[in-house]
Length: 571
Image 1 (tube, helix red, strand yellow):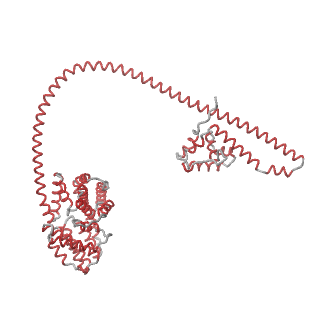
Image 2 (cartoon, helix red, strand yellow; image 1 turned 30 degrees about the vertical axis):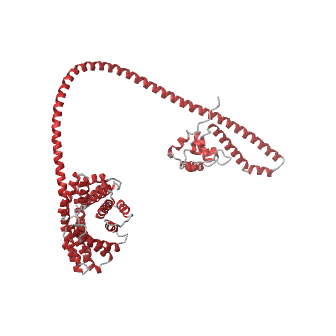
Image 3 (cartoon, one colour; image 1 turned 120 degrees about the vertical axis):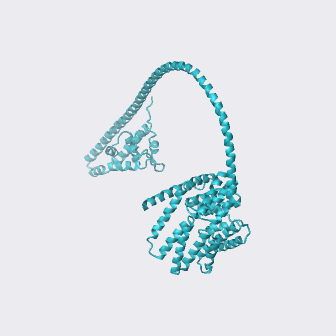
């Protein structure tokens, strides 16, 4: 059962995160309004997701073995319920107060009292929240709780000022004083620095050009799935509103509402403000939907201050919605009358058309018979043309195959003639050189110059020179037949690994190996015999060159055999 709940939670988290994050904060306000409408239809899914998360924490709490573990679990549960169900959050806060008192831990007690004051302020129990804050000894708080203390005082006096009404009441003056206090203690690396910095700047002559870019960067890098994300999007909206940028103000207010809906936040302020923005733009449908959603959430939380705030707006929106509906009903009645008139005209028109169709039906029957006869003749002609086209295509393919075979035969004959002449010349030269060598040895033997005979027969210089001449002759004839071979071969290799013969060389060993492949000799042993080297040397060179290829290795040799347009013999 627990595994099933976890899988459902993972599925919902992935689905709803993709809906918003896919926008990458580059959409306009209308895109976010569309996403918000879609998410509102899945409100129960988000609540189920929230309850699954709460269930996991409760399951872990069952295994808590110390007051510290229970204090942490109660804190997590209170945090989850804090924007979802106020009475449940208050229950776990009171449990933590009991634990703090039982252990005599003043820090736990102060932290819990701050949470309780925040919750009471959010539900509109401002007098009770003020009493809670008076129980906290501000002088004894550590730095992190002092920041929370100032934040809660700002939150409390903001609600008191909103409840009292008017822009310059005494609560707003105290709120301003606590804003100055918190900005004196906050550092830029604090998670809530941008949130409080925004409130410090709004409505004043203070400026901070880095504030909006910093908030946008934070949101772009976030998962858009926490209350802090919703608050920072709300702050961006307020900053853009202050600058007079209505489009971006609406966009980020919609984004804040999206995150609130995703996190099942019932203590929602952004949706109410978004409804006011859209109402000012005469978008009655969205304003009506959003303000009623905000009212439902405020009642279910409950948030008495927000209910009071919403009731100041909802009347004018509902009135505009009803007037708009009345006008639509009047237009619909007029439209129905017009439709009825058009229906009568349409009936008369259809009757005339039916009569005309009956007259045309007979003529069409005759025409269809003529068309069938003509279609039959055309079909026969088309079939004959198709058969002729197939015959022509086959003949063309045969001609192309014949031309290809003739070209290959012509090339083979030409290569054969060139290399037969080359072989005869080589053999003749070697016979002459052997005869000269025999005569030289004979003369030295007759004159008993045995030491010179030994030197002549043991030196490898003669063989090296002959092998060099042999390579040069082979290279010359091959490049005479295939002058573009080196360029075409290098086009098969990576640009920085192409093979360039040294000065004075026509081909090197690697190029000669693949020159023999081009001539149809693919056996590494035969190539080794031809080049007077070991088969392993041939194999290594072939393997090294294939690794430089930009085409598949298994097709490399086959492709090489097609390289180089051979130099045809003069006519």
